[in-house]
Image (cartoon, rainbow, N blue to C red):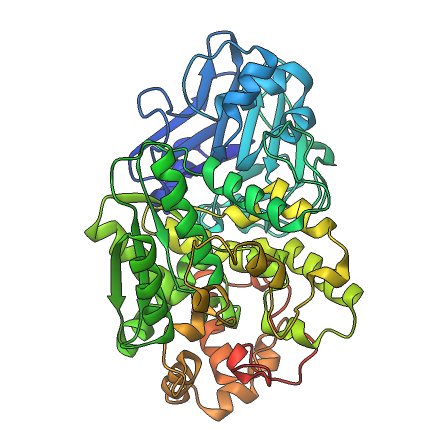
Length: 549
């Protein structure tokens, strides 16, 4: 997890503007570099580094002796960098995985480069010889990137919006700070002093499309279970690429448990000598703590339990919303536990890379409300919609809560090969079967002994719910507290103050007020509140749904 920051065409003193780059120091606590581009006096590139691969030569902005006119800053991991090097015969200058972005760009252009990257990324590539700037972001938007432009040629880019908020030109009328769209690359032309003009935008990969790059592991015809096993194992294996210690988030649910079990298995095969650490969080005797404890014992990890109190959770909300840059209700609820467990990992251990189960519910129809889908096609359509919007919800939560503490999260279920294969399966086969969501995934691992049977078939429990007891859910604890913070008249006035995504509950208004304190008038970053479909529930918690057991 790193942080990138760049400005082009600044009318203000670049040295003053660069102070904004320090707003994302948490993303890369190991090193920091700012470089002005002498070709363009109004431009600057900044980078906060979290050293994961090649700590000696992996600092950015990156330039190569062979291509000195190209400058690169990126946040991400390119899992197939060695395969690409072998396939094209590139002469490497470093062991850093992102170096291949430069080589691929020289080989075939920016869209060609993005198509061949198996990984997650957000990058800014500057070609001074041709006066072009290129921006790109991975298919699911696992790595974040915001940009702002204006009609006078100013452009700024940052991993998080907070690194753009204080820029004077970003505050002028007509300037809009917005998330860069996943799966796309954009091209800008720079004039003599570095003012940027938009040239074109291209979609290099869509969710559900098979990737263009070569893969070592592919599905087996007519054998869904074996295909899922091999593809998930492969997705986990490639994500063990690291010079730093690797651990796992472990809620005790199906997704995080499968990932943790496979990390233990594959790390042994790869000769990793340290014990894999797993981390779970919850209030005393919460379902997640109990389930995670059972999984950790079964797979033999160095397990850490973080027992949180309601007061600790409530006191973290302000910081959580600041880091999230979101006021979505279910995102905030679910982020508190992940934020606090990330804090523990940073302060109490030397684990830096954590694998997690994010993305499985969207790709594989894992939410409880999928039991109520009116048809297989409707369920498939909803799954694809969730995948498309992941970067604004669960993917955002995973990135920001871990990056806040200088950790790097990796999400195997959003592997391009695995996700495209699962989305290609006949819609009726992907629906919940025999009362169980993600039936195909559970069945694929049912005879492997990888997990205890009751964990493998454990019903879905949302992370924000599983950290507390069934008798008193986290959302109820929050609402009881917020009831004393927001009065009725404030809620009645909310529609006039917040016309977009108007808060209709005191909880929603409470989060929105904190958000507006840090990010005034930026409500469009969240297009809608996440809610279960095909339900009459007025609350996003799965515990309000009839199917919940």
